[in-house]
Image (cartoon, rainbow, N blue to C red; front, top):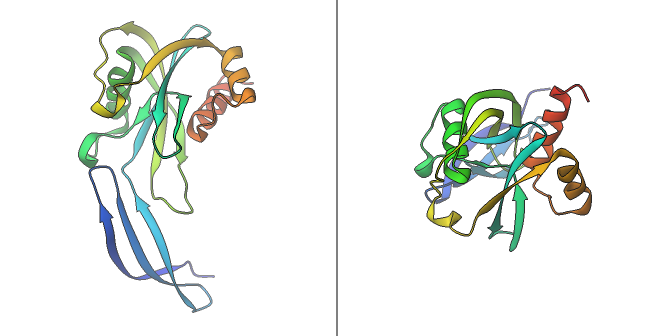
Length: 179
């Protein structure tokens, strides 16, 4: 069976972080339809580890109207395309002030493949040193803290951590450990 084919595309909206487009499509059976797509650049998520301590950030997430704990993650401003390793180091430094001697790629995640083209890389950061954070204006209410693995798992169970990328990255960490 052939895949869905894009017949035409039009940009509906654009800002510094994303583009929304509407595609006219032809399905495998030949019928026509539309598909709305949110295009966002690749992001990096960084699991900063110091022994059994892991660094999380908490911030207000405007789209859901709630504060949430998550691993540091993000894209470069103005949709700049950075190499995943460079982006990971940048996000870690920006949100936490941490610098890592080692950044190991654990895997890749698709954010919401039914509506978004965005993909992300997950990195494990070790050999950490503390410096000053370099947060963006939207991150001014962000704060960060260290948690044990047991605390993170309890926060997931309790609903204190609900960010899908953070939960998936945690799974990648545990799989890398052989758990």
